[in-house]
Image (cartoon, rainbow, N blue to C red):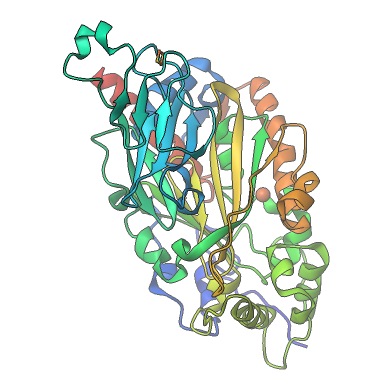
Length: 470
Ligand code: FES
Ligand SMILES: [Fe+2]
């Protein structure tokens, strides 16, 4: 029986337990350079006012100066596979018809009739033309006007009924992004090195196996922030302590708008309080449930002599995924097979890297309500050789229901639902607690909560820039 013994390298600004980079040293494969890079700008230790979450005026500034200028995930390409397929993407008053064109490209048309403003559609579907139900003006799905039954009475449109205005559309990794700012930098330039980091993991070769949309009784930033650091895990998710690192996770900003965090799996938390044998690490992981449990099952129990729990489960995962989808996983390192590698694109998206089935989160306000939010959870699996499966139908979970209650309908594993429900339990309490704050401020830690600080700093900068231009 081998035992896990942490090495310690004290550093002033980090937890003294083994670092993520040191964990990579014992990987059974060559680790990609992208996982070794560390770039952690220290962006201060100042406090953040609770009004950032609670004040309707701050929310109104976000609506006016943040959301119209950022790239936002509208859907996956697989949700609009055929010509004229469209989804309706809505966020803080924005309403876009995201439609597949006959040449395979995608357009995003503002869902507002140019006559008197009626919404043209209320839900997604497949339409080559959009007829306004009010007076019958009609546009093609490429935005061009098709018919205007009352054109004789519109001298202002003597040259013809104008086309529907468009937002910008760009794609990456099978995701469709929209942006209402004609002057915004390209999506690729915003993603920066993240594009190369994800290239071996082929997010575009994946399909939606699970899609759950949860309404949360908390401001959208609070919901996002619940997934932007790992040091809440020992108290919020104590069941994962024996097999997941937390206070010694790694946090980086790899370019201006992309941050990431790495947490190792099959390594105990430094706060677990005792040593674990390699066998215990695996049996605990299988016992309490996790993303990994659903993938590797009982096959992970027998650890070969000389192997660690981490190396063994990685190897089991390579075999199971290969049998499922035919992909050769031999070259992917242990970290790519089991770790939590979360990349966030400002302001509201999280994409899990690695070779295993990937989690993805998208957070946004719930309509125009600063006090509630929507969280989309996607589990993407690799497309099998037999062909691309239909994307899973989205399952909506209302504010007063749990992820666990939707497992059967959505296909989400019980272990993942439990972890998400634990996170959800905190959020309404944070929302209410902020109202009761005596200081009017929240405090972020300097390193571990650097990504939260980054989120607020960039929102503040966009608001200030927008006001300066106004
Ligand atoms: S409002 Fe659309 S046709 Fe009149
Ligand atoms: Fe959590």
